[in-house]
Length: 344
Ligand code: ASP
Image 1 (tube, rainbow, N blue to C red):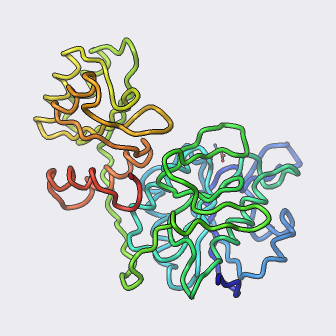
Image 2 (image 1 turned 180 degrees about the horizontal axis):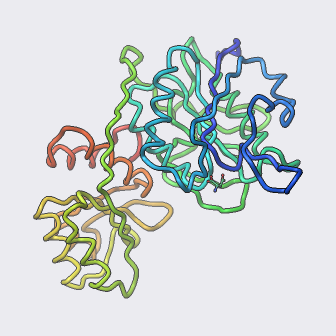
Image 3 (image 1 turned 120 degrees about the vertical axis):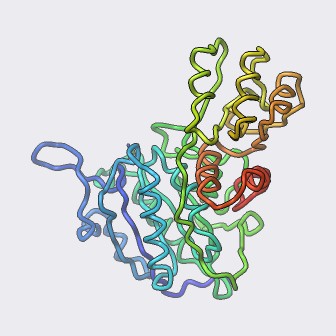
């Protein structure tokens, strides 16, 4: 049985469309003062839980998000962890998949829900999708079963689905249904009832204490290949000594051009200490290095196959692993393993 007792939820506004209202003077969108949130969403008064609000400083459009902002979000959850039953992070949609992935690596042994949500239309507009997203995210974060949180994960709630944060990607710039998790089924769905898919939810060992991993190393890059890609474009990237790791977005099941200049540059980069994680440009499916001749060369050059990881999770996982005090060998092992459900 899930419980509907009064829970205490911290709602952290980081910026983005969801917290915007129209300034009647000049018609521009500006951040809402959350002390007045119930004027915009009176339904919040009917919620049976205790809601606490805070805005991070600075409030940003999520296109400006940086690892410092992720650290601040994670520290805010960490500092308030014992005071609340669940956390909602209100965030712009543009980079929400990156931030949710990053937080899943920042917060280890999470036992409480951290639900990211946002909206395509500002909360101050009549047709806003923010109202339903926020209310359902709160309801989900408050559900407990036998005294423990129903969804103790970093997740993304949008439209009518709760998705594992590090499996999501933004796929529509204007649909209310803006996020998908193509390689992992939803954790919950909302309709007339909230339906939790317990078999998809990750339940950690409750005995373990929450750990905040503060250190991320941002010397990573993303290289998306395309037909006609030139050596002039690739060489400066793969000879850049400051780049410790690269996510290579390849075609299909992990294939790339077989031109020898390309594989030789990759080989040299890896021999000299670099790490290359091969992920697919496709929205769904998995990299299988060696399946075709066009990916065998990549495998032989030393690339790590990223399986079904998203680019967002791949980049943030590398930032996290490079920030730990571990050897390259250890990093390569962990890239092949799931740390917090980011690969199958
Ligand atoms: N540019 C905005 C942001 O990501 C869009 C949004 O909120 O959906 O912050």
